[in-house]
Length: 249
Image (cartoon, rainbow, N blue to C red):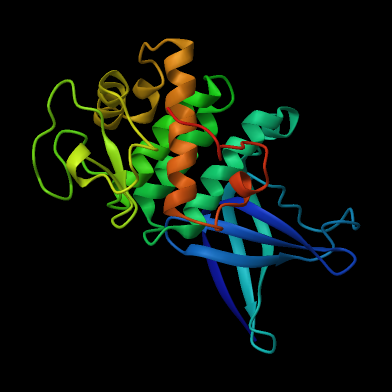
């Protein structure tokens, strides 16, 4: 006898298993994170295919004997096939997936944030989408503060204040609470952009005006911040495509 489950979801990671199978990590707003087998996905034309970033309603069953979930059927909403055609967009999506997997709150609000970001990657600027996703993700995880006052000492930031970073708390902080000797900083104009990004939803955040240089610096800043906040846990950053070891904003 099999246990069954059904719900909206999206495949956020795939891994090969044995000669013909694939393990899919499915993120569902109702079921959370589930690892499910797609048997024969790599060889059989008759098997249920669940390519990376496929979104739809998943019908799953769980074997009593093995305790493993498997995909029985998918009512596909979108495949997001464009992500496989562009390395940078694909890596951004992989980063979003890494963050979801590390999250303590894989719920409906995070699901909307993730799927909105994946949809925006089709046409919007990659770095703007990544900044918006990271800013909102860190806020939901309680790892950023509001960029108005220091989350450690609660002092309001001065208009011209450069933010540092607390390696103890894992958040951007005022200059007095900085524990990294100004090696990871967020200047005033960048902070205002990030604050405005946090105030807006994803669709409107990517429409904010910012120079190419400023946008790129903020993007690289957040990549470095994530490496400090989630050491060794983000495959997309640790792989080396976005090397940030020697950068200072």
